[in-house]
Amino acid sequence: MFKAGLTALALAATPAQAQQANALASYVVNLAGINVAYVNIRLEADGASYQLDLSADVAGLAQVVSQGSGSVNSGGRITGDGLASDRFFLETRTQSERFQVEARYQGGNAVHHAISPPLTNNENRVQVTSSHRSGVNDPIAAFILRGNGLDQSLCNRTMRIFTGVERFDLNLGFAEMQQATSSRTGYQGPVVLCHMRYNPIAGHFSTSEITNYLRDNQRMLAWFAPLEGTGYFIPYRVLIGTSFGDLSMVLTRLE
Image (cartoon, rainbow, N blue to C red; front, side, top):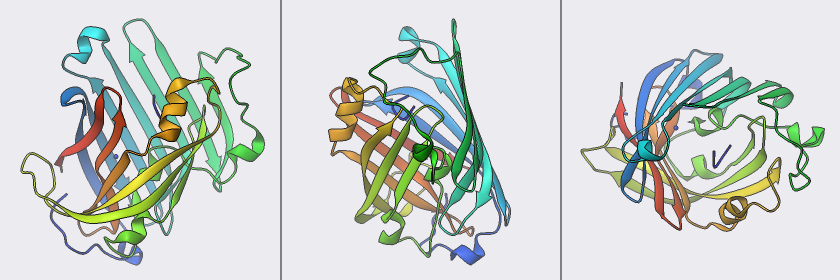
């Protein structure tokens, strides 16, 4: 599932100030400079709980290959360093197929998951056990951060993700502080750049070339920007180097 997110503000609020947020962030996804999808993410958060809603549509030349759309819903609790999912639902749609994944979490543990249509048994798929579902988050909630400010400490974390299909870690580390200056994006101002490493745990195919490529990929980056006056930090840009060119998701608008 991993294969198959602002206005200028120099200093973000402290976690204690991160009470309410209501924002709509729009992104464009491109591969080697060609737009392939558009993504909208709505975040609503009060002092204790949050709701995230994501919608995505295939765009541009990618529509020649496949026309499709997808949606993700995530809801749960607010913690000291981000969001903790209680429920996660993903649906992808094409002209001929529909795929759904549902997962529920309690106290950071995945207690239920369902996939439709069910996955076929394959001896090369690494089995997901109960221990793999402990201390996890969903893949969209994990990318909304909280912290004491826009600094390198935001990158000092491991995202332990269970999608309902796969269990993997994203190990983040600090790269550098940068300035976002492009007028074509939805934010101009300071950002923190984190490098990421993908560590597959379970649910993937041991023979998958894509999984092995991502595991060995050293060009995976995420830039985070402050969400004004809330104490939250959201993705400004996410980039994955591929053999076809960079796959990138960039913030284009914030309301």
